[in-house]
Length: 495
Image (cartoon, rainbow, N blue to C red; front, side, top):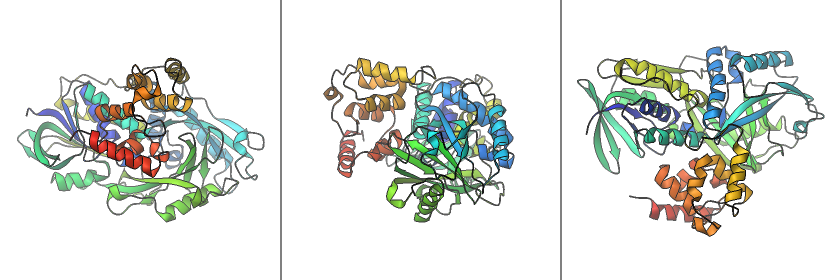
C-alpha cells in the first residue's frame, strides 16, 4: 500500500474538515473514524453557527471575530443545512445590566464585517409576539442574529466532499497503534475484524475528547498538553412557543441557555457546562442536568417547563484546551494546533468549535505547508458543500421546485428533503412519479430510496446513524417503526 500524504484520526467536524481541505489541495488523504462520522462531540452541539456572544466577557475577541466572519462564509457554502436565526435576549433586572448587553451586541454586530445578517434591535415584549410565552415581568429584550446548522450533516458533507476529491474515508475503523519509521508513520487500523497497516507522511490527530489519550497511549508520544473535558447536555421538549425565533436566557449562576425551535414540532434547550469524568463516549444528560435546564427555562417561560415535557435528551463532551481556567464556563473555546516534528510530523488538534472548523482546517494546512511544497493554497471559502449549490436566499424556491416537479410530496416531506440534501434531493427522488416509487415507507416520510442514498453515499450503517445523525426522525418514529428499520438495515447494509 503506497503511503498517503495525510492520515487523519477522527471523523468529527475538525477531522473531516481537514481531510476535505487537504484533498482539495491535491494531497492524498486517508481518514479513520472508530465509530460513525460525527458520532461523538460533533453531533451533540447546540446546532449553532455563532460568534459566541458570551465569550466577549472573557475577552476572546480573536475567536469571536473569526467566528463572526465565518458565519456568513459558511451560510453561502451550505444554505440547505444552515440558515439565519433571530435571537431574543430578554432583559432581566437581576442579571447583566441592559447597557452592558447593548454594548456587547454593538461589538458583536460590527466585529465581523456583517453583510447578510440583520443587526440588533430592541423589542417591547408587551407588544411583540416574542413576549407572549414569557413571564409578564419581562418587558424589554434585544434581538440579534446568529445561525443554525445541522451539525451531523455538516460533518458527513465534509467527508463526502473530501472523498469526491480523492480522500479515503474509513468508518468503524479504530486506530490501535502507530509508530514512526524513518520519515513515515505506520498506522495500525482495526476494521471489520481485521488489522491493516497504513503508511503516511504526516499524521493528524483530530480525536476530539480522545486527543490526549491518542498522543500518549495509542501513539506513545510524550506530551504535557491536555484537554479539559466539559459535558454539554441538552433537552428536547414538545414545542413551547409558536414563532420561529430563539431565546437567549441568562442565569443567576452566570450561565446562559438557548431555547430554539427544533425540527418543526419541538424546542431544543441547552446547554450545560459540567466538567466530565469518565469515558467521553458515555456522556449522558443526567437527571440533575435535566432538572437544571427545566428550572432555568422556567425562570423565563410563563408556563413551567417540566420533565414531563422532555421527549429526548443528548449530551456530548467538548474537548477544550486546558488553559487552567477555574470553571468549565470560563475555559477557552479557542483551538490550539500542536506540531511535533521529532520524526515524521504529528499535528494534534486541541479544542475548537463547530463555527470555526473551516478556518481551523486552513490553519492546520498552513502548519503543514512546509512538508508539502507542491500543494495548492487555501480554497474552501465559499465553495459549496454537496447540495449547497444554490443562493443563500433560494431555499424557498428550492422547496417550491420540488413540490412542483414531485407533486406527491407533502410540504413537510419536501422541506425536510431540501433541508437535508439541498439540490441533491432530486437525485434521491429520481424519476419517481408517485410516493410508492420511492419504495418502502418506514414512517415520518423516511423511504427506501432515501435510505439507499444514506447507505451508499453517506456512510450510514445502522438505524442509529440514520435516525439520530443523518436525520432526526428518531423523534417521530415509534419503537416498532425503529425496530423495523433496524431489521431492514441489517439485511441491506453490505457486510
